[in-house]
Length: 173
Image (cartoon, rainbow, N blue to C red; front, side):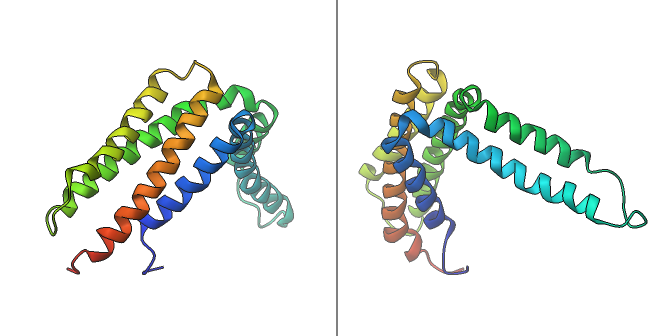
């Protein structure tokens, strides 16, 4: 995985999240929460089943973390609407971090090549969209998800452009 950079992976993840949020804003929050619930369920079930599959002489302590993870995963799956509102905060925070990261990467790229000021416009807008999502999540959730989705798509595209234009040309140290 040496040739594939984290910038490229971030761009692909942001692209997928953005497409889902824009295409299905009504269901996106619930589906993301349900997916997170399943992510909690799978390892918890493995740990609990693994505990009971061992012979009684080999068993260590009971997997309390597995039970807690199982209960939390079930709660996420059963009540996704409750957690979908919290997801707006998380996605807004991710946009803020993405905007800050892009601005920092462009600032670092200035050390080895000129970076036009226009390249800072989109990361600044992504940062602003994340801040708006953080401070106004109680508005229409679908509108927030569409804004976050479009911002994620723009972030993805600018991250790919920056990766092609700057990161790949970074001098090897």
